[in-house]
Each structure stands twice: as structure tokens, then as C-alpha cells.
Amino acid sequence: MVEKYRHLYVVTEIEQGKLLPVSKEMIGEARRLMDGFNQKYSSKEKVVAIVLGNNIKELSKELIQIGADSVIYCDHPELEEIRNTIYTKVICQIAINKEIGGKIEAEYAENFRRPRYMFFAADSIGRHLSSTVLAGLNSGLASDINQLVIEDIEMSHQQKTGGVKETYEKTLEMYRPDFSGFLWTTILCLDNRNPAFKRDYHPQACSIIPGVFEPLEVDSKRQGQVLEFIPRIHNLDLRVKVISREIIQSEVDFETPRTIVSFGRGIKDDPEKNIKLVEQLAKELKAEIGITLPMSKKPYSISQSLDSKYMIPDRVIGTSGHKTSAMLYIASGVSGAMQHIWGMKDSGFVVAINPDEEAPIKDECDIFIKGRMEDVIPLLIEEIKKQIQIVEA
Ligand SMILES: Cc1cc2nc3c(=O)[nH]c(=O)nc-3n(C[C@H](O)[C@H](O)[C@H](O)COP(=O)(O)OP(=O)(O)OC[C@H]3O[C@@H](n4cnc5c(N)ncnc54)[C@H](O)[C@@H]3O)c2cc1C
Image (cartoon, rainbow, N blue to C red; front, side, top):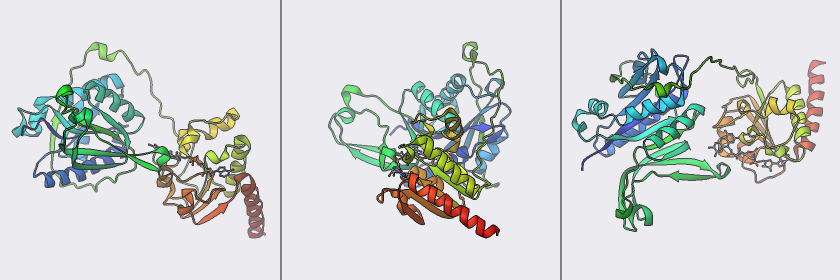
């Protein structure tokens, strides 16, 4: 069979000249997947890293050392700052470029049309970029993925196959946690084989949650291919200018403190008062304050000072935020969805305060205090104060 779609292209991201950790993680997972793929299908498809920027050729070596077979780099002064319009255009040009496809694998040069698979980071840049690139390539996108499998799938579907049983070889099964993280959704991007609506959907693409996959160890002996891509940039693509850029350093510190007190939707009965209770508890313990993801969407009406200090993405613990290995982690009004657990499961000792004994956090903690935070936290503060007095006496 003629193979029109080949390889796994990984769109990497850089910040101040360095690869972001999520880019390394995506290359690691791409390597593991394609090693399995090539073994299973006796194939030689590649992990291809794409890197865009200004003076970034040097990064190609690092990308090869962490698992890429080929690197397509695009060095251009206009690519120094990430701008969605121009980045989308250049990545789409790379994806459909037959010449570059042919250089990656001469044997399939004639037939190559686009990548088989494509990965982006599920961060603020990658989420936007992945959607505009896939719209440009007329294919589908699964967002916020944290598990990937390549399988042959047999299925019959009224729309996709006209009700006939078909085998979809080399299908990327893309998993994401849904319904508050208590269920998994598997997303497939399948060609329409129904003769009435025949149409291909390639690449099969997704954005990948940062921190989920492990990067590979650097192997300085690893060899690979480095290819330069010269983009076609039109003046109209450059209408958005970056006048100045400032990186705002977070004031939230989850590295230094040994204790983290986090709160979730359990504050709902009196958000203002409950956040102040958490604040007091954190003060006694010299702890940093974390939140669950829904808190960062500002679901409650509270005073501006508490809102801007605590209900912010920077404080989120979990797959969409930070990972902590605090010595003591106190989860107050937190149910324990898998995305949150991922961020705190390496903590030394975990205390949960929750009136619901069925809450999943119960399985993740060392001490479960069954009760409302309004009742429990004041008692905890009182006891901590007493203990501090004893220690200091
Ligand atoms: C792609 C994706 C990524 C995500 N990433 C993250 C992430 O990084 N971090 C994250 O946290 N979530 C994340 N989520 C959301 C996650 O799935 C859950 O929806 C979220 O963690 C639940 O937040 P919660 O525990 O605050 O709320 P809920 O699940 O509503 O739980 C509230 C808890 O408070 C308890 N409670 C009620 N009243 C009180 C009281 N008076 N005192 C004490 N407890 C009380 C309840 O019994 C309940 O257990 C993500 C979801 C998706 C789909």
C-alpha cells in the first residue's frame, strides 16, 4: 500500500533559548511510541522535531540526544518571538513539504503528503498553536492528552465507514481525563472511508499535558539528521508586532516551603471566610497556599484582594499546574480528582479535610479528617498554636 502519511512530528517550544521541559517530555514519549511502532509494523518511521526561532540551530543537537531522529529547524529573525499567525503558517508549510519529507526518508519521497502523527504541548502557546495548525491542515485535534497508544482498530460506523466493518491500522488512541477526571475519554482521528463522504484526516494530532511523560536521558552519542527549512513569509503575516516582552516571575513558591495547604470547591458555603481560615492555617505552618483548577476559574464572588492573590493559575496543583513533593500537604475541600492527585502524590505526609468519606482523596491521604473545614481548621489552628508554645517553652 502507498504510504502517504509518515512519521511523528513534534512541535517543540523554547523560552530564552532553552527547550521547555514539556518539549523534552514529548520527544521522549514520541521515541517510545515510534520504537514500538517500528518494531510492530517492521517500519522505519521517524521522530521528527520541529524547532522555530532565531539562532536556534544549536538546539538540534540536543533534540537528537534526547530522542529525535530528524530535526527540522527554521531560523529567522521574524520567528524570535512566538506569534501565532506566523508560527501557524510556517508549521503548516513544514508539515506539507514534500521535499523535506523526502529528505527524511528518500524511499517515500514521491508519496509523502503529511505527517502521520503530530504532537504539541498543552500549554498556553501549544493549545492555541495546535488548533490553528490543525485547522490549517484540515485535520482533527485532541487536546490535553495524558496517555497514548498506537493500535489497529476494527470498527463499523454509519458515518465513517458507511456501516461496513473496516480495519484502521496504526491508529493513535489519545486518552484524556474527563468528567472531573473520574472518567477517561479516548479520542480517535479517523479517515472517512464511507464512499459518500470519503475524506482523509491526517495528521492525527494532539496536545500533551506538561509533566505527564518522562524525558529520555541525554545520550551524547546519538546521531540524527538536521534539516533547515526556509519559510515563505509574506508581509501580511507580520502585521502583529511584538513591541516589548516581559517575563513575570511568579510570587508563588512551591519549591521552598515544606508545607502546602490547598483548598478547593469545598470553600463554597462561605468562600471569603473559608479562604481566610486557610490563610490563617498556612500562616501558622509557614506554608504556601495551593488551589484546585476550578478555583483558578474564579467561581465565587469574593473580595478583590483575596481573588487576585489566590484564585490564580499560578497556584494550581496538578497536571495543569504544579507538582509538589512537600513534606506535609493539607488538602481542604478537595475531592481528589486524578489531575490534582498527580500534582501532590509525591508529598511526604497528606492530611485531607472533607465531610464526604467517599471522596477519592481519602485513598491518597495519611490522615482523613471527616468534617467541614469551617469546623476543623479553627481546631487545627488552636492545637498548632498550643504545640508551638510547648516547643518554644
Ligand atoms: C484536562 C484537565 C486537566 C485538569 N487539571 C487539573 C489540575 O491540574 N488540578 C486540579 O485540581 N484539577 C484539574 N482538573 C479538574 C479536576 O478534574 C477536578 O474537576 C478538580 O480537581 C475538582 O476540584 P475540587 O476538588 O476543588 O472540586 P470538587 O470535585 O467539587 O470537590 C469539592 C470537595 O469539597 C468537599 N466539601 C464540600 N463542602 C466542604 C466543606 N464545608 N469543608 C470541606 N470539604 C467540603 C466535597 O465533599 C468535595 O469532595 C483538570 C481537569 C481536566 C479535564
